[in-house]
Image 1 (cartoon, rainbow, N blue to C red):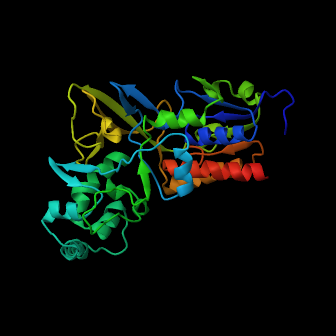
Image 2: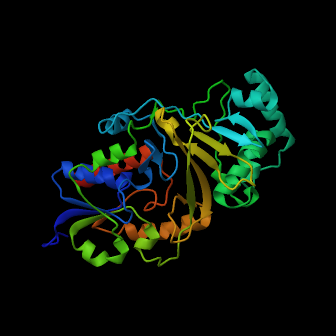
Image 3: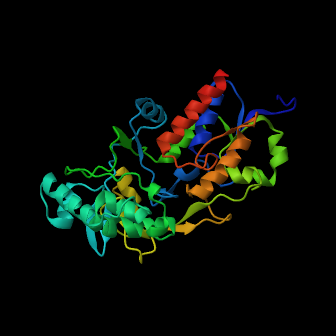
Length: 372
């Protein structure tokens, strides 16, 4: 329905990647867009703060990776990406192990040197702990990778991440575990991988170039007047909040970040180190300068703490267990009846997305929408 006094064709609620891509593509098609965000910056969770000349990933490490050449070319049309390769380490009781699980990891654990030795070691641990169909995440992980890797590199990290004991988490959370029988520390198998040269703000600023953006605007505080500004809404926030929590609140996991500046060039020698012990409250430390091979005199390191989500915190990860999935499907029935609202992104679709998947989803929705 066209609103006769509407100033814009689209009001886009949220300036994360989904909103940025949709706004850019709609504007290319001659549409008038207004992008609003309750934060004081655009770009959503990929936003970077410049500290000591370093692009600090304000909301945790974001490493772009994809096998889709079209999406890779798309993001590189706004900013050139570097050749950064994600090769995280895991710290367990002061010992360092390479990730993902590969021949370097197996040598560090057991001093095995050949793929056959590693396979035999893992299989022997699986065989010793067979217990029928896995009833929880712990049993599932051990059935896939054995006990040594599970207890040293998975259990503590996972329990911190989810805020629950592994035996209380459903088995389906871990469908598979990446295991490589080569000496290869590249975390992703994707053909294309990197970090924007100059930071992610260059990507989002490029997408939003020439588009009106208003920051510090909470959609839910002025919903009716904001809705009246545009013919259609693109909503990227919490789906349950959009419908006033009428079926109840969906659950999320949140994160808290502590950023520290060190008066030295290199603090930990790697961009990302996971801490896999339960008693260490943070899951990982991030030294941001390594994403862009920085040579600055100082460095910035971030500790990442998982937390239970409450409405005053930022939601990061949907808790896709049976109860929440059932609840989301009720909200999905409502959104499918909407004529003038387009829902997209991790929060609106209650689904975990990587960056390339969000961009792909936005481009697909644009294509479908403008072909109708």
